[in-house]
Image (tube, rainbow, N blue to C red):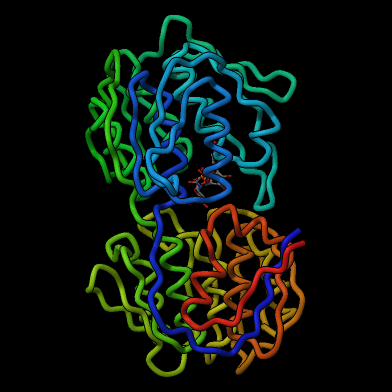
Length: 420
Ligand code: UD1
């Protein structure tokens, strides 16, 4: 297994190109199952999770063809020949469950392995299933698989989500696009990745109102057609590199980054003493003086994203004063805490909150990545730590960050990948 070696303590300086958003590209690839005609997606990031989704789509017999040399523009399309999403693929990536809605809507049935538990809590899919049932699908759970069937098609429904689940909103939005009649999804999640999906569905002939709000109305159509769509820039990658500039006391220009998707993160960073300026086709981030301890609580969008919680904690580990970081989205998302503490951080967890007491410096140590965002928080801490940090289990990082060590090294970080 690969590891990443970092010799910390160098301020970063330079420019990093922000790629397409992983969490937008995954449902967009699944949306390719909704039509026989080609859906052309550009700005698709090159990540392990995207490779997994491509393999899943190919497993359904639908083609995924790169249209450029580096595989960032993909054409998806063709007949669905198989409606099973097998355990071997789904266990690698929970977002595989996003094929459920499109398969049952277009092919009238789906057999999708249950994603099971994952490192950051139980993460059930009950809201996805309940919504599809309301739209007329018959759901059976058997042998670790969800069987969904709607041989005569889905119909519109009034769905109220008890919590604004990102994945459930996406699955139901895709299914509703091909259902008979009107579907209303109330208390829908409002993440920018959902609006990106909705806009792509509209380009494919879908009829969706309320995009960007918590009440989506979908007038189902008989067929969707092909379209061309560019994936939005990754707001979590942007926030992560903003933290890299801040934690090392450097300056980074984040090309393609969008400020409007990052309000809550930038508010917290500003309070912590980090300046972010818009211009030159992106955002320029630099630490002004010292970092100040700043509280934050994760919330559904437009609140502070849970996917930035671990990175903020790394930053607060070297801030002056204390910070309270509260996690409200996932039950068990503090696995990075003991690892940050191995690097000399002073973090205590009390229920859903972590108290971070800033220290003047961290010191390098071997650490273990446990999930995607936890891994990158250890890379950030390693960039600021004195001495050598080795991050083990880097495959987590490769799921969601493209060429992380190249991007950081190009800005002056002393970082390399050690082949395992
Ligand atoms: C998506 C993101 C993930 C991010 C998360 C929250 C993708 C591919 N992944 O994950 O990076 O951390 O949003 O912003 O976009 N829940 C249920 N029942 C359900 C569905 C969800 O109880 O049927 C709960 C989950 O356990 C969790 C909460 O709702 O506690 C939020 O989950 P959800 O918004 O669905 O996250 P994902 O779509 O899995």
